[in-house]
Image (cartoon, rainbow, N blue to C red):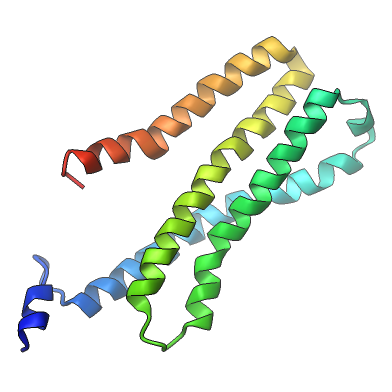
Length: 162
């Protein structure tokens, strides 16, 4: 075994190639969990403007809706991109590159999912209860999601535990 291969051995006994294969499989499995929810949100948002009452929404609601639609479209595209990369770069010995790029794409997709969820929540809550409750509920939920999605793992990562 070469020195490079020996250095690449992990505590679990995987070599670098085995680790990358496992990490890529884990990433693709995570996307199988996230993508259906994002796609359902996107599909729902695509139908909303054709609903009978949509013409009566306020300019603020229209603006937030449009921002939500754009964030959802971008999130969907970013979360689907690793699968496209996987197919296009199939057997090109680019697994490490695909993992690094896919990780960035997925994190960006999840980051855009946050304002997409918040915007959807705001518009619906604003229609039902008004702008003040909508702002409060949306802010609380957006802060909560930002905390559990980003602050918690980044804190652990900065502590050197992850």
